[in-house]
Length: 83
Image (tube, rainbow, N blue to C red):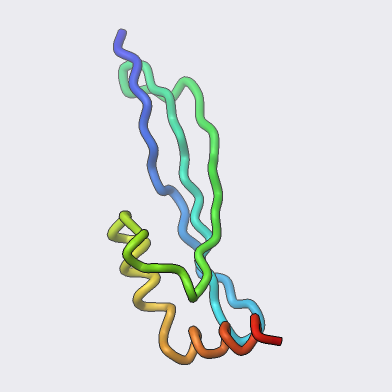
């Protein structure tokens, strides 16, 4: 009977907001016994276009950020927050 805890990114969504996009990320925190889930909780957060990419450790999230957050998207976001 081995108890383990793991953190996995189980959902990454690209959401359009006006003329820009954000990434919504959901992480599952799981407690397992012999690879069977005993408990699971979720943690969610949003990544805006002006986020520092160097702070993103997950390679899949970083790849999606690079694909979605074009210069045009970043410019539209800057215009939105300066209003």
